[in-house]
Image (tube, rainbow, N blue to C red; front, side):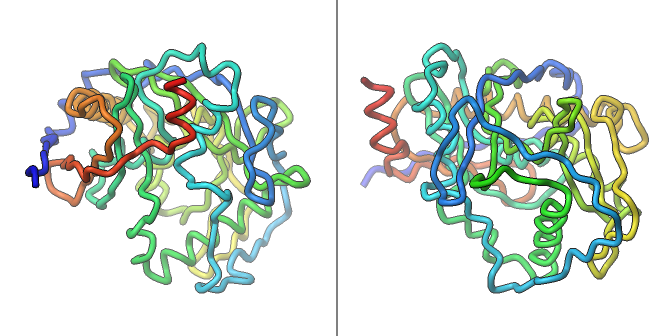
Length: 321
């Protein structure tokens, strides 16, 4: 049996990445949208309607109804990683999109935040027809090892969204397809939309312990920035999962350069993300095969081939046809 090929990306010191690219070069634009209905079907290609933002009066008990055995955010009948591929397949505009990378907002957030955080992650990657694909593994082992406290906090986030948003009848979740620039690569990504204000602004809804905002803001800003959100709305929770004050609003444009996120930190995350994508694109052969992209702490990211096929057959028929 042929020996598996293994590549490594060596992580440099953080200030190395602050001068590679300014965070504003991402400059994402919307190229489409879609929804997942309550039955888990892909629907409303390029004409999705988004949840409206509500302002319920506090207090809000986010812990109500919590059951550790019943937490399941699965939305669709197909693998989560196929969402951007479904849009590419269904959208007439897709044939006109010139991109180097196709992925999801959450994948990019985890990779980009590695420069600040040593939590491990694992993704699957493939380069085919000069396009790089990165996705969550179909069976995400990390989510199964989380503590009850982590699961409870995740539940509180879901409950807060339920209080703050009003979804359209029959719709489970709505997404925008965005195209932006990370380093030297043009990226196409799917990004779930929390809500849209009456002004048209995209709102990201989050819960946080108020005293820990300084610690959480870089990660939340990166996730929201990649998703082209314009407003962050925070619900300040206590240790029992109760939000006793009205949510506080932050304009995304005001966050870099503030006490919560220095401009060089924003540049470091975007610069690091662009550099990793460039390395990954060059390291992978142009072939339909699965490579494991993994970070386990320390100063390197590994890349190892499994020998298995990567792209679903229906998508291969579409792009090869």
